[in-house]
Length: 215
Ligand code: MG
Image 1 (cartoon, rainbow, N blue to C red):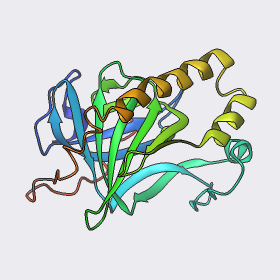
Image 2 (image 1 turned 60 degrees about the vertical axis):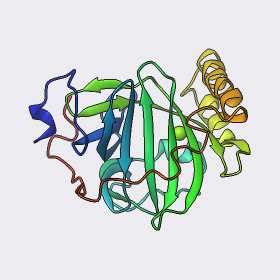
Image 3 (image 1 turned 90 degrees about the vertical axis):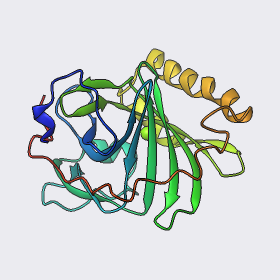
Image 4 (image 1 turned 45 degrees about the vertical axis):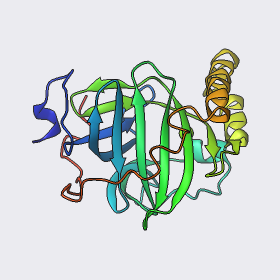
């Protein structure tokens, strides 16, 4: 099924393909094809290594160097081009209204690497899947349960260049702080119960649908 054939809101079945997309004010800047694991109060999405993506790239199609300072990267001319999700399996847990998703990461050979709290706008269901906008700041939780803020410096730069107002920034920090007691108390999904999760071996690799940037 092409994603555009679905009408929002749509209930998806295990094994269906959909897109998790990032867009702030305008066009899609990042699109991840995922496999639906479960579509219920907590949506579970599997992102597998080798998945084709759409992401911001230089106008000639080359990658934007990750070591460029954030403000310079943000100001670079760019287009949305082809990429590939590499290295990790991710199980992405999304709940309506939450200002973050929570991801479990494994290596390609399913060695558990930790949890990632991706601070973002509450997701919106759209015909292609789910849309959100990234908030730059994240939390990382190692397999032993030790947590740390991630990308604080980039977040500070994003505030400095006006991507987030101070009020927005404080709400983003507060959203992260609200997760910390759950991490420390090992509340689901930080209770290790999903570490042995594996995808259905019959599921296929999602491709990039033609309508990846449809509204
Ligand atoms: Mg993030």
